[in-house]
Every structure is written in C-alpha cells, then in structure tokens.
Image (cartoon, rainbow, N blue to C red; front, top):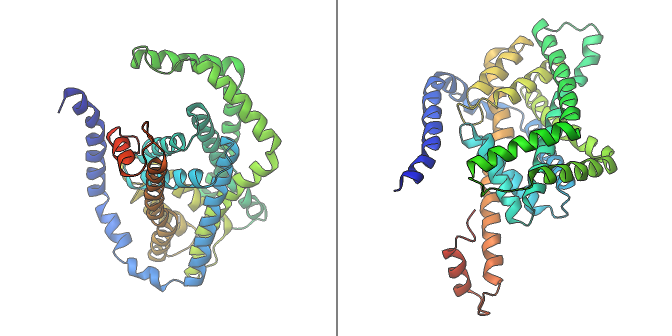
Length: 357
C-alpha cells in the first residue's frame, strides 16, 4: 500500500474511531431507548402507517424539488441518488458530506453535469433548511392564543424564526454578483493549490451561470417550489405528530414543532450515525417538557426514528444497488469499439472501473 493511499484512509479511520468512542459513550442511552423497542409494537399501527405515508410524501416533495432545481425530467436517477445519499448520511458518523458526495456522483453518472448538480444540490439544501426553519409558523396561533407552553419551547420557536430571517438574508447577500465572484475566486485559488493547477477551471463563470439559471427556474415555478419546500418539512412534522398520536396522546402543536426541530438539529451531530443517541434523548426530553411521560416519550422517539431514519436508510441501500445494476445493464447493451456486446463489453468496462459507483 502506498503512502498516498494510506493518507487517504486516515480521515476515514479517524471518523470511524470517533464514532466508535461516541457510541460507547451513548451506549447507556441507547440501551435505555432501544432496550424496550418491543414497546413500539404496542402503538396504534394505523397511525404509524399514516406516519410512514407522511414521510413518503416528504421524500416525494424532496425529489420533485430536486427535479426543479436540477432541471431534470426523469424521476428515477433523482430519487435513487437522494435515497442512497440519505442512507449513507444515516449510517456513517458525520455522514452528511459523504452522503452528499454519493448523491453528487450518482447524479453525474446519470448524465447531469457537475456544475448543475452542485448548484442544484446546494439550492435544494438551502430551500429544505428554510422550510424546516419556517415550520414554527404553525405554532404561532397556539402561542398567541395564550396556551400554557414551557418557556424553553417558546424560545425555541422564536429562535427558529430568527434563524429563518438570517438564512434568507445570507442567501440574498451571497447571490449578489460582487460577493459571489469574490467567494468563487477564493474557491478557485484553493482548488488550484490543492489540485496543483490540474483541478477544474472557470469556477467564477460557472457560478454566475448557475446562479442565473437557478434564479430564473425558481422564479418561473416559485409557487410550486414554495409548496414543495413546505410540503417536505410538513410531511416530516406530521410523521412525528402521528407517531405521538399512535401512543394515545394529543400533544400541543408547539411541543411537536419544538421536538421536530430538536430532532433535526441533533441528527446533524457528527459523532454517531445520524446523531444516534443524541436524537432519541433530545426528542424524548422535549416531549417530556410538553407533559408526556419520559418512558412514553422514549418509545415515541424510537418509533419516529424507525419511520424517519432507519426504514429510509434500508430503502436507500436498495436504491443504490438498483442504480448500480441499471448502469451495468446499460453498459452491457452498449457496443464496444469492435461492435461487441454482452460479456466482452461488460468485462472491458469493468476493467476500466466504468460501472463502479
């Protein structure tokens, strides 16, 4: 093994080591949360089925939003890449960047050019974040009605809306010509240094072109894009609400909104896969603040994780395998230089690593 390949593996080993240590630290919490996982079967399966349907609707909104910003007509590649990227982000410690890289690579392999894919994924991520931060708007009627709500939960609602204003302002500033050009020039210098002049060139031009294309695309379909953005966030929120209802509870909307926000933030903690342990404790703690008994809140947290994280991760693994097999079949049916098809073509392509993801 060369020194270069060893250096490439060091970050992976580092993340795996951190993840292993973190899992040991949260083992008591995981034992507490998942030790009674059988209690999930005691929940009302009808409400759980509706929760899964809402989660599916959230994913569908995400795919359609991606199709808009990527300007793609086909569903299969967009859906498969998002599912596979989500699966990687769920099972790898600090898996967000790894999941995004898998999604980007699959989009490029399906025919999307790199600048469009990067710009589209960035735009989709910003819109999704805006939808999650705007979700506490649902809680404002409950707050204004004078309902008794824990002060910490109220602060969380207002903090989320404040972050929404900050995000919108940051996007407006970052997409201005002067700021975008300056940031892209800095990125170009970093690429030139890291790649020793062999990296991609013309990043400034690509950034301006993609910014204009995205702006025009979203403006022409702003109503649809807004509906899909909020639909994605609302689907995830309703999934959590219905899981709580499946436990025989009727929680305050503010409590579920706050718990949903905590679950999303805790899921970004990079030390364990998908924030494993942190999400369950954070979600159960917030639900307990809303008056739900802590043991019941833990069961709800585990059930919600099964619906929102682990089931989609399993489906994402299947989507990855399907995408890989589809590429292999297309490579098999494509004639090689001598006009051969079948096993000879596949062997040649495999030797060139042309069908590996």
